[in-house]
Every structure is written in C-alpha cells, then in structure tokens.
Length: 285
Image (tube, rainbow, N blue to C red; front, side, top):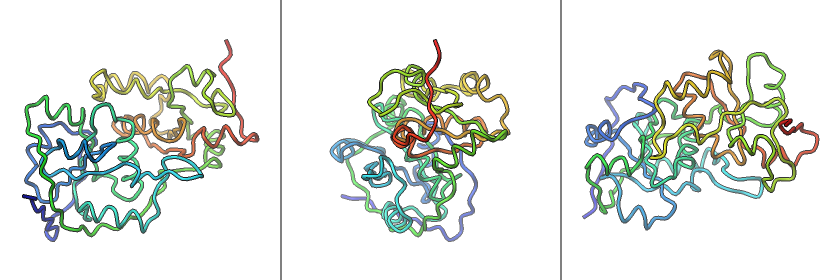
C-alpha cells in the first residue's frame, strides 16, 4: 500500500540546514513532515527496487534537461515549479538528495540546480548516498509514497553564469576561474572538443579529488588542502567550469562546504571550445 506523505508547513520556521548530512542525520528525521528525500536514479527500475522509506524518485534530466544548445540546462521557471511541487516540495521543505552507486556528479548538479532555483540553504546531500545508508544498516523499501503537492515556486538566482561573465571574472581581482576537470584534460589531452586545453588564465581543482573511493566527500581539512593552494583568499569568488557543467558541481559542493562564494559557467567547454574568439591554452611542458 502506498504511504501518504503530508506536508503541513503552516507553523514551521526555516533554518539553514547542513550541506552534507549523514545517514544517521536523515534517519533521525524521517518522520519530520517537512523532510523531502529525493533519490536520483538513472532508471526508475532502480528506484522501484530499493530506496529510503518515503523517498521520491527523480530522473535527473527532468531537472537538468538537455537541449540542442547544450547539456545539463536549468529548466525554465514554470517547468521547475511544476516538477518541484509534484515532488512535494514546499517553501519550507528540508530536502535531502540521495545518489545511488557512483552517481555523485549528476546528483551534485541537481544540488546546484535546486540552489539556483531558490532553495539555497534548504538542500542537503546525503554523504555516501544509498550505499552509505545501507552500510549503516538502515532499511530500504519498494513502497512508493503518495506525495501531497507542494507549494514551492521557483525563483532562479544568479549561480549560473555565461561566457561573458567568465571573461569579466578573468579580468577581475575579486574572482578566480577554476577548471574542475582532471589535470590531464586541463593540461591539453585530447577530449573530442574542437579545442583542447583550458580557458586561458583558469586554475585547476580536479573534481575526483573531492571524494574518496567510497564516494564520500573527504573531510574538510583534506578539501582545504586542494583549495587553499589554488584560491587562498576565501573572499574571492570562484567561477567553475568543466566539460558540460556536470562534474564541476562536485567542486561546487566542496567549495560551499569550505565557505567560498561559488558560481558555475554552465555551458563550460562544450560552448567555449566552439567559440574561436574565446581564449584557450595548453599547459607548457
């Protein structure tokens, strides 16, 4: 039997919630009527096989749609509002995103997208995802919850920037442009894009360094060791990019954890490498 999840938000005050949460944190709050656990699965079959009790299913492309203009776009305001309300998200919801297997990058992009749509401070990332939940001996279920429609209305912010913003950031003393790809691609290994290398003047914080072999975000002191040599001044804004605006989202979360001001050049090298007037370079050897 499906379980109804009611969201009565009339008397609840919002407090900013942690960016990263543990399985224990989620388990202790499963009966909170404002909690919305969202499981990101590549296929609905995987969600139907097992998920955290009460979790709702989200196919990433619903919230990060592809188009002829590029991959991982932000949905328009009307579409985003309809989707988030269908998921039961209201203006005071506490959202926890749960990835499955190694799907850290796509789930991180969903995290960033939800913050872009006006939910900053209300979205948490379950560190280690469903595997960490199961390793903690917490239950999974096949039961599909029946969800009461939410009342959240998308209000897009300014986390997503364009190529002109990147160019301005390269000339600014208050910003740093960071390439989140693996160093070999930053240096100039062949990628299949029209041009290889990196945006001229960009620095490098590779996204795989942010998580360990079990897909857990590393402790803050380790994350600091990757950020501080590249961007020692936390007053500076970091403008991230990667191939298509996906993997850089992992560095976005790490930077948020460390207190940096973060933005994403969504079109990334998918666009930049195709516009010959935009500067690129390879690492000199």
